[in-house]
Image (cartoon, rainbow over all chains, first blue to last red; front, side, top):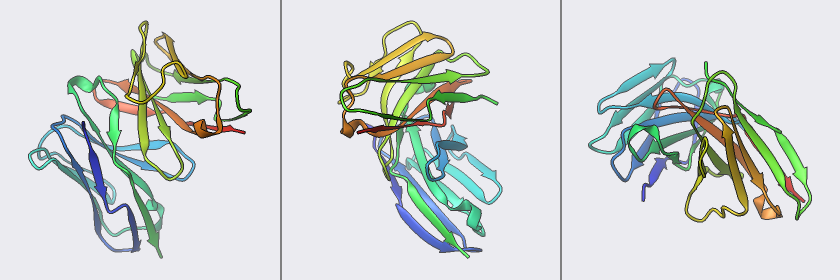
Length: 113
Length: 114
């Protein structure tokens, strides 16, 4: 059974600071996703990581994937209030994208002025 | 970009009644759609995989007779919650697989059973 663990589950930080969210998964996977969810809303796709060593960046967010360690990170640089949200990582557990995703519990991020 | 819509966005129903939720891919054809459920302040849990023209595949612990899924066309999947009870109150979100690995999520349907 595929398990996905995120940490921390809750993070309060100040604007301008850097921080990293970690996502570990238990079995081999060929795809790792990061999503953002605002309160009462659905998911916004941030990144899809498909290969070992993949790194993607969008604005103040950067995601990386280490398939050997079964670890992905989401790094936040110089946080701003608008990044406050819940961030989920999710993993697909079979090849070709045929199956649905297994999600981590989410990281509730609050960025304070 | 790929757009997935859901209808209704919110629904309140009485215990014992059935509710149908629609998931549509607006600008692409989706052979596979997924249904997830999210309880307040929790993560998303995959309920079932909906394949066009065939029976849905349900995850362990999800009652297929209670959560009826129909994927009659390449742009529409429906989830019917039959004989709903208060414990079925949740946020139901569908997604569609696009271009191999990409998955796009609908806006969700908030179901409240009174």
